[in-house]
Length: 387
Length: 212
Figure: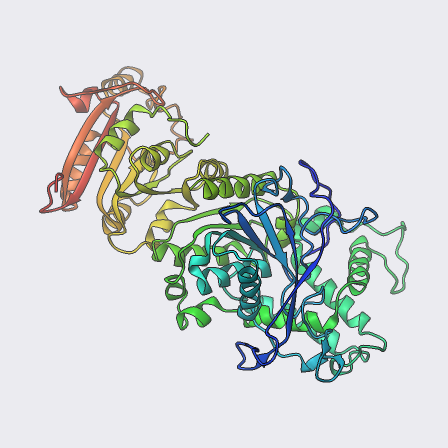
């Protein structure tokens, strides 16, 4: 997902929010990971917005994408220039209305925004984990979130919602803890990465690992693999847009010049954009976390992990009501991949709605203001709450 | 929005009256979900719909209905045998490219199939062809021959024969007279093939009676 500096089109911002921390799996009660490793202690950074009602029936868990964090909406301080990553969707009077719902968003296990990840201090060595951090899966991330939801005393969530890697977590939630939600809304996501998606991730990882500063992940305290991470981010950004989006956004326009430079400086606007995105990303993201999270996304395969290879069998576990949404120009997780999910749900006679939203902005469309997306989510939640 | 009773179009009202409360129903080409809403909220059916148009799908979802965006010819293939008590194909058969394959598929996923279509042998259409010599065009069928989505010309007699030839049993049939979108109409009992604007049929497998 990209960073968008877009302000709310309607509704107010939720205002000031605070990042909180939940610690669990303290030795000796380590958390068993999918790889077989037992791991702990684990800290999960999370933020909550709105009020939990007396019946504890209005909680919505939002799952973030690759580069997101727990800061889904609002501001940490009055001086913050940017609100959380989904401020257009989450807030008072917005589609995910914080006047009605209790919204929870946590940073994934393996991340670098407050939850335990490769840049966290390993209590045994007193130094950052680096590559000693165990490989985690989407399933592990979801089990860590489950521990947080249990800690918050919520027996059933009204909804789990997420796009992209967040959508994978939605699917994982729906199959691992089928009775823990009324509705599930996976957006712009897939049951498993295509070879194309794995290929892009691998090129991005190679960019990081080829950076001499990476030093097998042991770069904390020294120069960081900023060049590699920036290139990785640039590759990501290409996959988040689309041919059409790039044509509209940049075309072949030149950056601050009228003629070619005839050297390897920035000529085209698209080059300038990618370099800027790469540079901005390294200021806030950890290269090792990028490696771990993209690997988790590549390993994710709902059919394999929940249905011995059959997507239909996997969804026989699900109980939630689903709203599946794809975007017409998303070529990272194209509509046919959402249709595969819907097909498996239909074969299990699950209650599912599906809409392909016509949008030019590629995979990133779910992060941009979109009245259709907002009204679908708003009304789907309304009906879930009424039932 | 969702709790306001809607006034149903007359042809949909006839279809709804044939459906047992609490049944599992799929409406193919459900449009804005008028029938689905009625079945779900008044008849307490487990109702789902298929619709190709994104705007109409969104309207349905906003009404709290479960609707899938897609081509009904493909979408029906995914359902297991006997997934529904009723499959509704309202005002769509005349636009289907392969009616035989589709009807067989619908009989696979549902116990009963309810089909409605405009009756092309209505007297006004017959007269129009006879006296003007041009392809018929009226309020019900407002298209020219070159832009009509109605690629199948069906009459009430045709469908009855079609169902029997395919080996299905006509469990119920109604010939109705109504203008398109009209909330009022009436059943036509005398010379239906000549006087009805729409035909509505419920078909089932051989050996099954409609009241079972």
